[in-house]
Image (cartoon, rainbow, N blue to C red):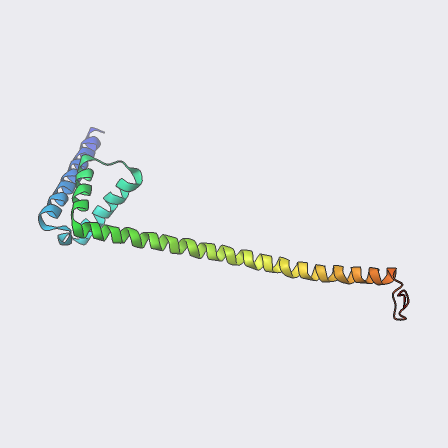
Length: 143
């Protein structure tokens, strides 16, 4: 148990050291010098910070460093915009499918209503004709 705690503490210290080194690298060389795995790590950290709102001092330093680097700021702004656009597109596609289903259902209701209306009109017409002494002899009308 004690060994596991020491191992976890060591991992936390290594993670903090990595974050500090990453912040220093961005300050010294700029965001464009980061490797793909480092950018992915920064993405994870930023997402976690914005979603949970909880961050360590090291995470805050990294966040400030990223936001102060113009190229990094533009990269993450574009990333956020593209993610938002993709989410909106997916939402619109889902809405379109739902609207299509609603349209199909209401189209069926519309057709059924039309046939029912036509049958009711015919029935009503026949009743009116009978009340007026209908038939083909022309009776019932004052001529």
